[in-house]
Amino acid sequence: MESSRAVRLQRWEHRTAGPLTLLAVLFIVVYAVPVLDPDLPATWRRVCEAVNLAVWGLFGLDYVLRLGLSTDRRRFVRDHLFDLVVLLLPMLRPLRMLRVVTALLVLNRRAEAWTRGKLALYVGSTTVLLVAVAALAILDAERGSADGNISTYPQALWWAVVTITTVGYGDLYPSTTSGRFVALALMIGGIGLIGFVTGSLATWIVERISTDERPTQVTRADLAALVDEITQLRAEIAELRPSPDARSTRLTDETPPHSDQSR
Image (cartoon, helix red, strand yellow):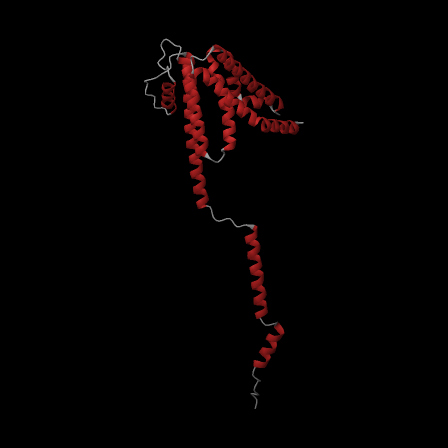
């Protein structure tokens, strides 16, 4: 029963990987359009919001289905606790921009599978995506605030780059609760990326050193070839060595006759 559930879960994740990736991209687009265009007509704004909610609901449905197909549901919830929090928090209107984090999680899961073993590509794409989306989220949170100092997307991009690199000039900063949540998520994401790169680089260096210092491994084919050579050498030596009968005859012929000492 458990193995059947595991197989069904694997099939579900495999079949939904492509559609969920497209939905994540669509999610980011419909989120970005109203943020980048404050003068967007009300009709299109409502359409974007409806698509946003629909895709977010599909992400939630995917989580529920994967939970139902998992063999150990408690462990699944523990391993995907952040996914659950990101799905539930946007129900609070001040935290609605956190919905976009769900799309980031989906894209990150696919990017990790597609770029496995390509550290530079994975880190680069993740960083660019994280900065672009964080800039959208901070602009969405800060532009309507009376005390806000981030009112354009270029300013938001600059703030995101400064924050994720832990430079923190302080020329631009969030003044709203929602904006501070975005800043917190971006700072944690930046620290996580730095830790990931550092750990991966250290692991690569250790593996290279271990490989260089490790003696050459002997395969079964090498052992078989060595045994064959030894067998051939022994056969050639046996052919060159005289037989015991020939050796005794040779010794008899070479022995001088005994002289008669009595004479």
